[in-house]
Image (cartoon, rainbow, N blue to C red):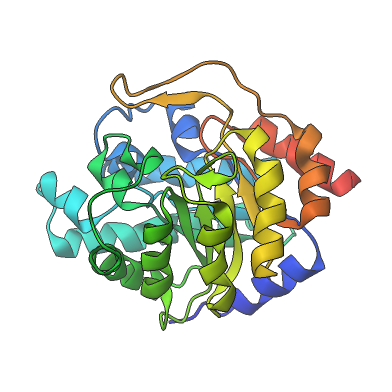
Length: 308
């Protein structure tokens, strides 16, 4: 099922940069919610869905054009470990899109007149493992196995009619290939976004090789990077644009590092809006933030892009 306004998103990317939201988890934690279990923010889809809506609304109000759903860590396998059956898991995946849509409606009712879009998050296999593997890749699974893992929940999310699927925080070119296979025929556009270390994926493959297959996939309307250090974005934007010829999506984290054992962020932030114009000039058409980047920073990105 294709969203009735999906073509407008592609048109908007051609017209100029759009602002993505920031980190869902940090916004929920700022509101007092405990995300320390393996389901992370996906747990609140079942327990406190209204909190998810409010987090989306905070970003729309801050200046985001696109909200990314709380389905990053929502998988049939992960829910099953918590005793949540297939049918209820499918309902929660669908709900993630509905909650973002509801936030967009509330934002419009409050007087926000710009178009607002919803991106359904499809996190990597490593997110389901909840052991930091999404920053390493190399799971010991082949492309076909990874495609079989991703396709069922992507079908559910696509049926909920988001404007785009966010195939995000991908650490490994093999998983990127699996996601490109899984997205074919779903009838919903997608962006493909790697988490990177310099000029390589987290698994060590050159970005040129990782991005190249997306050039020939019609469903992919943007390629890029997310949940990486802000300083790694500059080179990645140039490579993604050059290799694929498609609009580029960028939403780095704060620059802090994730300690999977302690389940905590360490180090200091290096995120700032000084690079936004550089990213835009290099081809970025979707710009936002990931983990530890909140509404205030998204508001600054909005101001920087509007001024540019």
